Length: 174
Image (cartoon, rainbow, N blue to C red; front, side, top):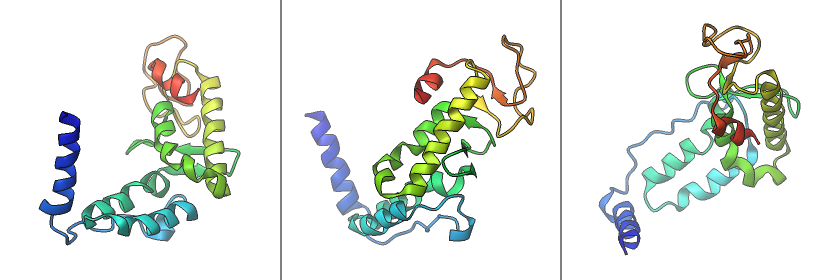
C-alpha cells in the first residue's frame, strides 16, 4: 500500500505540482566536445524526451542518459581498447565503469560503434585485472598516478591507481 501511495505522489508531483515550463538548461557538451558519439542513444533521446509530461524531467533525461558517452570515454580504439574515467579523477574503477555503460546495453545490436566501444572497455578491464587482481582502479597507462605509496601485497605498480581489494569490483567485471 505504501509503495502505491509513493508512486501516486510521484506522478502527482511530476504532472501537477511542478511547473510545465523548463528551468533547466541543456547541459550536454557541444557535439564536437563530446568524448563519444552514439546515433542510437541520440535518436532515443530525441524520440523520448518530448514524451515527458514535465519538461524538466525530459531535460534531465536528455542530459543524464548520454553523460558517460559525452564526458568519460577517454581512450577509444574501437573493439581493442576503451578507457572510461569515473568522475573527476582520470582513473578507471572496475565497478563504476561497468555500471556507467549498463544503460547502453539495449542499443548494442543496432549501434556497432557503441558495441565496439563497450567491447573495448571489457578488454581494458580484462587486461587491468591481469595487471593486478587485487586492485579496484587503474591508470590509463603506467603513469604512476594515484595511491602509489599504499603499503600492500602485491606492491603497487604504475598501472594501478588504487589497490583496495573490493570483491564487488571484480564481480562487476565478471
